[in-house]
Amino acid sequence: MDVCADWTEKYRPKTLSSVVGNPKAVADLTAWAKQWAAGTPRYKAAVLMGSPGIGKTTSAEALARDMGWDIIEMNASDQRTGEAIKQTALKGAFSNTFGEDGEFLTTRDGKRKLIVLDEADSLFGNADRGAMPVIVELIRTSKQPVLLIVNDFYELSRKSAAIKSETLQITFQKPTSVSIVKALRNICRNEGIEAEDEVLRLIADNSNGDVRAAVRDLESISMGRKELTAEDASELSNRIIRKNIYDLMYSIFRKNDPFGARRLMMDVDEEPRTVMMWVDENLPYEYRDPYDLYRGYNQLSRADIFLGRVSRRQYFGLWSYAGDLMSAGVSTAKRNSSYNRDRIRFPMYLSKLSRSKGIRATKAALCQKLADYTHNSTKRVSQDILDPIRTIFRQDPEFRSVLVHDAMLDEDDVGFLLGEKSDSKKVKEIMAEAAEYGKSSSKAFEPVYPDIPEEFRAPIIEKEPEPEPKAEEPPAPKTTERPKGQRSLFDF
Image (cartoon, rainbow, N blue to C red):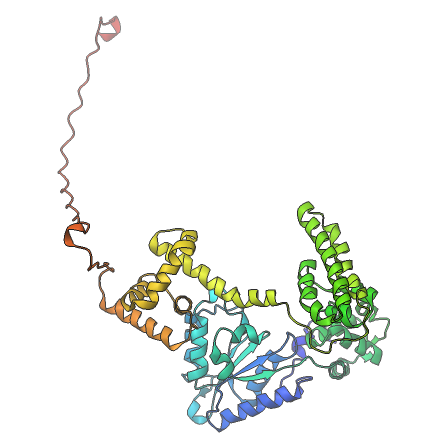
């Protein structure tokens, strides 16, 4: 057994047919690739979406290997500003290139490159400004297949309507434990390891659908062993499995197990204040009986009292009391035996914050640019200057061109001022007008006030030329002063 090799890389699927647990996603991806082989498909870009560790990036690499395509990949570790994507992905989408083996790849001969933007939903920090318009241009005009890999499709699609309407969305699901067990059994066979079925089942259940985690767990307990028993996997079975917030809500409202809800509250990696928002959002939908609803909110309000004491006293030991009340307390408040069949609702407050996150980041960056341009503080710009500038910006084309050029605004800034998406037609027209203004204008913008009479305008004061420096005169010879008063004998 080669203990030096990382099993996650060693046993990474090399073909799409060996990808675990997602036959429908694999079939959709293969069909899309065959459309490229036959010509230009309807969707030039596809989005692979799903939770981490379930095979999205592996499938992209396997697809390129199956089709004989070269691959150009940009992930979160690369600089992914608009200019960087233009230089790497957009140019690669139109030009021929050389493959890894030195072969010259031409589109005319059917040789293609797969453009992959991994973790595309995390493109939009301040360091990646301007990326969205370039991505939209890429998926609209590319002559090569494009794959966007995301964990959160909503985070990407809310930036542009083109992401929803002009891409093929392929969803990857978490593989079942049965599928993961089959993959682990193949690894054990290749490594010469005898493993009981119970061991592999424990590892698969413990991975929560993450194939990478399951392979790493198997590798960790196989070190120095050729046979694995259930006792060898005891450290994995005793390990705390982090549950998500949906599991906690289901346990509180629908399982009728207060002690189980309390235990699950300890396993969920969320602060009590966040859990309280979830309980508050779902309580009116889960408890339809008025008395159940009254008792539930009574427990929740008592939990809020303890959270308030935590804030005032900075004594976080009170978190346990708040957690007990909002989990077991709310669970015991229900006396009616009927249960809601609808899905658990995401808190509206958190949803609004998430939707406005990008808008708030764009506004902060825009205020900083306008503060530098107008020589004001960002607070003054945000409170007093931004709204008038926005009004003038929407009504005065000349002012728009000057401001975009001189303040170096980008598509996100212009979209914010207009109240439109950064890849809209209007934004593109304004950016083009600003570029033309920069080429044709050789002097700074001078404001014109046609309604102010000449006598009331501020005079233009021309700067007087500086006088020429005079020639330096030679230094005067030093003279030794004669000492005053009576001289001593030492002077002679």
